[in-house]
Image (tube, rainbow, N blue to C red):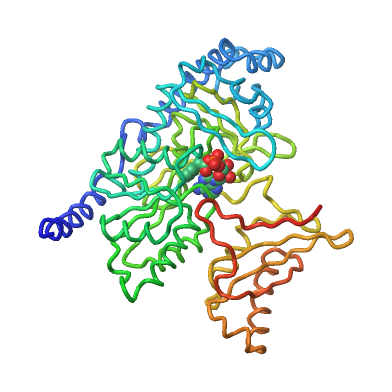
Length: 458
Ligand code: DLL
């Protein structure tokens, strides 16, 4: 017992010091002059096109139909001649049709669940695994993790890429990884207290839920008994307002960062925020990004908002040429104070296929979230219910009260409802209804939260 007590303040002191001094994992690549970076991207792009042409029948046919060969790629903008790849292409070639090597050369297989049809299956060669760990190592270092960190991974281990992806990257930087997996909230909290966990890997919604659960136990274990300092949050959207809420709930200087990726592009590790938190640095030596108009498929100018399209320059097991992510963002190429030269993508605004079209107006759940977060009488748990009435779509925003007693105080309840209604309406510009529901009545998720219930067509 005495050894544990002595070690704790020493480790926290060390952690504080190292977090402030060593935040770039691979300075040579992450701070490379942009001209050199672009030259490297071009070399890698040409090698990738050649590789795809020779090793994947699917790409061979697509490239031939478009008249593209590696030597036709003279500049990075020649990427525009390569056809896009979509999730349906992966589904249609299920399970291994887009693999470039026999399964015996694949060392890991993951799949994304998907609610309908075949899952999308992805395979990694040994080299892919090394690149993936490197990408994650950079992202977690930029956020502030290091070899002194004790990191609890609350993503579900299994076919989902989140848990194992972060696991390998964190082990690579020498962190102490605690693979608790998802669920079992009380046990998660116990391990956090007992192991001195200072870093958590989770979805933002689960991180928030854990903070709530910790607060409920605070008579027995005050919030100060947790040493949580850093959140590596990802896999679902999180507005800056929601992030503030999460940080406030954990208190004690808890700092949350956002990281992004998708299984078709390895998993986590495509991009992540540094401590400046002004966009997610893209690992551009591995991922060549474009932003397109998802209707016309035109490539947009730098700084314009649209759908992110990614070419995975170094991925080989299942190569990805111009993969349409469906995620909406924009990319900032200006220098960042942290010293990295890698461009930053803005936090994901929404998915082009999750975007709700309500009476002709585009609505992203994140817009509603920003409107709700400043309201102190409600908790940050909400749900959007879309229905069809006659020919018109309706949107009900269900929000959870903090104080259930308000349901009895009609005038106050009505005033609050009106305030929230007006706030959301001013942002979306369409009529909505707001329902205030009892505390804890909206479902909590241990993985990705499902905020939209679409009852149209039901
Ligand atoms: O969610 C990979 C991942 C795991 C990223 C853990 C970060 C942390 P998929 O299950 O294939 O992979 O889901 C990919 O999730 O297209 C986005 O719509 C969404 N997504 C992932 N990260 C973020 C984020 C993983 N930081 C899909 N912000 C993507 C918003 C995100 N959405």
